Image: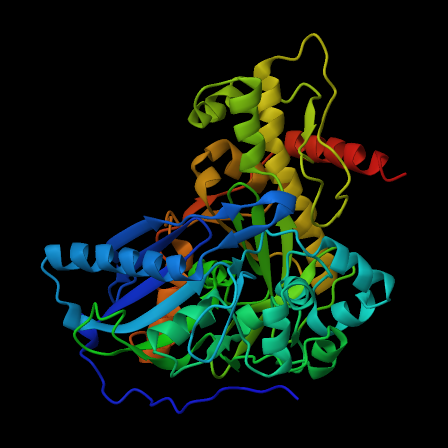
Length: 514
């Protein structure tokens, strides 16, 4: 039986003056916490950023100190509030709080809120053997059917199993019903409300490998199969809902409602305006996370995607397909730092445009394997088609083109799974500053590609959801009107070069599969 610690949460008891309403949004990421305050037009008016230490340990273990996460959040919030007041604003006008968080990272603590172990970070590989064991025991189909996910160390439950099997104090706490599990959003909520609220949102729940995607509940059978019976699990709520009230570590003079919690990639999808079926977002960073809205029912993937929640309100749950690309910006950094083809990544746009095409050169950036939709995790990177006529400019162009080709592979697979065409693609992240990449992506897809020009899109999405629940925004239609800063890249009328380039990429990718 799954136990929940539930406390009564009061609904909002007043209607603030929304013309002077501000939403504080905490984006707790892997490497830092960013706090932004947005006004009722969705404009950021203050920001604070605090770097967060991650411990990369032997054997692929990756951890963070739960107390340091709290201190990190507090420092970021304090910076933001100081900047807010320095501009003449009043903290009393903050009427709602939203939280977005690094997904899959989790903490286990006791009823007093004391961590029983460090936070186990999503990057941690400690559960590789456990995953292999579960696969060998035939759990793959059951897990994917129920959760929409794959048995992989990326997701929380396999690492929780590792703790149960290797840390006696945690095993005892789980067996006695004294171990409280939570992703980072839940950990923050529990501490911000002094233990009064123990909850998570549906998007974070959907990343744990313990959540039944269709029934939208914790799956008791899976929990038993994993040997985790007795673990305390948070109540599951809509992303935009009432989670509790807080004074933000006493940084505020009044209690403010936390009206949204959501995983960072899902928050980015909402911030980018992925509100209808067929809309998608891609975050282009070291790697790339793609989410496509697939409607109000989950879609099982047969083409290398995972099925997940997109976002939710109390009246609507939207589902998504997700694809993960391992190397995007990482390829560019490799060419800069290890090959020495340029000294500043900003040079790459001009280098790519200085040649007419890639001269038959392709870089397959499988430095850590190929992710979605190929899942060739044992594959290694390669440079194909080199000749004496190839220059460093062709290599740089090939690296930039590989970003677009990988995204196109994922989009094609998503369209097959969802049986729908891509309606629009919104892209964010540092690489979107490279106009060649975004334009080539538009040419390859033969679709418009939009960049919103907002670097903190996860914080914006959490703020939109918090404001939606708090009444700052009347409805999603009102939020749509705020997304008016997009730069639109239109596909070239003659896309023969992009089409030829993509066909060449597919030939190289698939020749290793034969």
